[in-house]
Length: 240
Length: 215
Image (cartoon, rainbow over all chains, first blue to last red; front, top):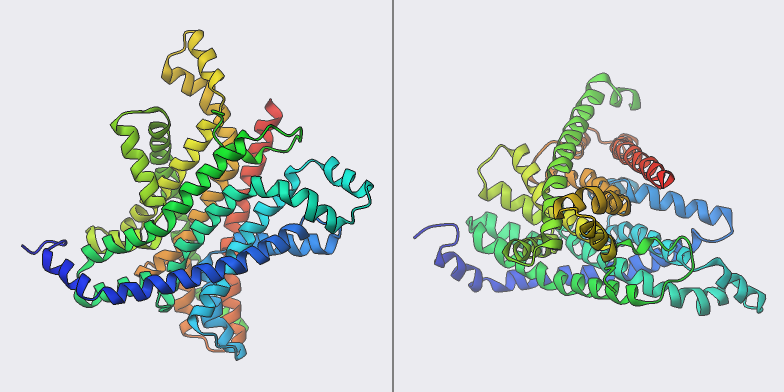
């Protein structure tokens, strides 16, 4: 028997399991650090885009539009092939972390902006009238409410980020997809390699995606606010 | 040196790749919208096997990287590279659109179904005349963002050697060494993607405004 899923190919894969484990750990590590970076950038630029200061708003607009409308791969290639021309040579893992953090930061910024906008303006005004500063009002009044609305799309971004770590394989980043690709193109045992890799990504992403759906359901059980622009939760289940 | 970079031949070379990017994107968007809608409706309405199968499809495919599907179709399916690429993008994007359609259908209150049934509408008529028009309006932002993602995702096809605009740009970069030239090529590629995506998002925004105004 010599099909794409022949037994000896599976045996070869399990003998070389450390190759896949190494890739899996790299993917996990890059995901976690990039996600932290994306959160920091996303929250920062999300708050910028709702601020009254025009320059900050404009900076945030340009960041979001430029990053969201160009491919991640081009951004990765720019760090990998472009920056060395300026004398900046970064290790591939750092390139992955930077590119993924910046790319998903732009998406998270939009999520944060929508979350803040979904809170009725009256809340902010009431807080300001009580002597809160802008940042205090954000910290104690607006953000705690926005978090509930923001959590589902934010979790989906985490899933997308994990999947997008596979872009590293194109610049030999040592991630799971890279290890799979190089292992299977050396011995041509594609079948088992792709199945195992798919399952490993599924193991990371499926629980998060399921959590996102549960957050959605929970958020939709919260009593409707009287805010007109609370339309962003259209994805939630209306069964409640 | 900038002037010889912007020669007619180089511009044509890049534009040819951009054409392929647009072709792959448009075919993928059309096919995945069809399959995704079917998957989403099945998942939303069928309690039986078809519903379960589409749930498994959606959850499995959308939780694995698209690059995996590109490699799978490339090495396991025997097709012309561009068609294998379209197949991979369609397999992946259908699952995402299926999920968007499910969410859109769920956003319509149960009472709408009941009201339509009580007026003698059949299931398909209710879907066609009552649910879909309303759900579609809710789905526009998510669909727009996914269509833009498709255009961007075509760049991954360069990983299997399909010479769309990213591929053409990287090939072109191979024969130019100066910083200005390399950065100009990056600028041109980014500009092409940006233009396509920005135009698409403006179209969607206009469409949504029209639908909102209609009500």
